[in-house]
Length: 615
Image (cartoon, rainbow, N blue to C red; front, side, top):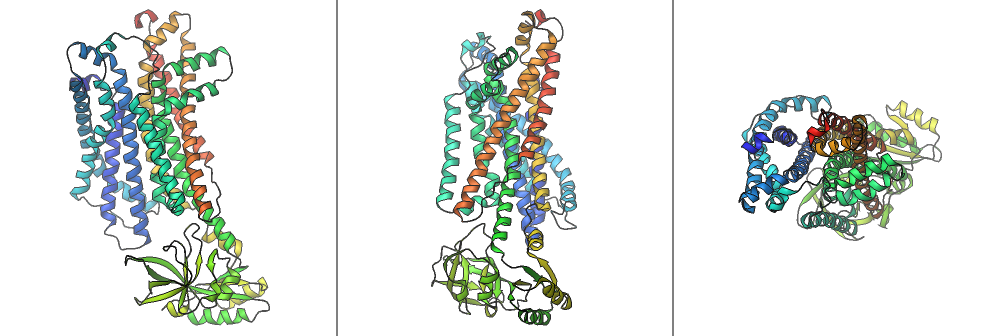
């Protein structure tokens, strides 16, 4: 308890990150509990996915921040632990002491965060509703299990994040009490090497397995949101090693100020790693959360452009089945017109284990016209051979072969066994199951693709029959936009909370690491450096280290996006890379606006008074 009280300033950042993490987990769990009471549908599924992603990112960010701050906190207490060893403390006693401190801090943060989360849950529900991410009238209740679960995460995250640091504290030798060196080069311990390489190897193995087995797995939102965390954690553990060449590269000019800044950053690699790690986290999260879904959306938009061969696409009036049939007949009478009406129909494909998986179906009356107005990615078979006893489906349904029999559940619950007429490439996973109208009970035409007819005549007929006609470009912009405002709002909701965490961690780290350099800065002043130049040196070094963290985060982002591009290529889909340079640059600038002023203010306070007094 006395150690916690004495080091309360250094532990403030860890406490704030833990309390905010528990608060957000409590609020999201309360939201998840309320969302399960909503009627089934896309809104409910999207809301559950949004809250689950937010909670997962918050838990990872809180654990990352706690592990980073705890590692540096133990390193700065090396002399204290050495003195305790000289006084007779055993290794086990020091390890248990650090773990007990973390447990007490976690309990305090959990209690604070649970109270904040319960108060913030209604605000979160209103914010989700205002952003159109939750249905109108969405409200959270006060069940007990979300608060208990969130409370338990506080001490668990604190202990997990401090476990390695506690073990390192127990290995401090008594001789460490006599060390006065300001240069810290032995940062990469065997455990850190092992952890970093293990995480990196796990990430590579998971990506390789997906690319060779099911590339579409890398394109799912849950995968490209959570999987990069392995790479981020591995890069953070290996940051001191990776920072060396980057520091030398960024200070390539041989002028004296860059040389001095480089020497200061290289001489304190633990300090450099502690500052670069939160910057790496913020930049990599911003890059992946923005770039990954944008890459998938761009690929789907490019895929839709490549597959849509119709000149005009018509949408009949809702519920007007007779009008749609009359419009189709009138369109077919136009010279040179190829008309393909289709209707959406819900169905399910029964997998080998008997599970019925819902799928999007489309009923096509004229398969030959479908192949003329839509460039289907045919892998095998002929879609024009579709009849009442067959279906056209994607390879994602268990890699079927032409002629195989698949069991389907139709919209009215009827179960049928259909022959596979053709197999389509999986692509981005947006292929419907094509059937004939006989296998789509109750389906009404909701789309008519027209090719080869005069645009004016088609538009006039659509107007006469109460339908809406759109050009290919307008229809693609409306139904397959590259920029989805709802997706942007989802990303902003998750990213804003992650950046809040990292801003707290950065401010705390910059203040703590610079305050610990009091002796070093005093020695510079005694060597003839003015106070102003010392402040400029600290600011330049902090900016340099921030740039290193941003570059590492950018590298992690580019690696993630490159694996997604490879997955798209393997799935037979267009592979455009949506590089989020704006998000990366804005995040790096935000980190610099936090670290540089905090470090400068700490240096200003550390150099206050006479230099000799600091020694």
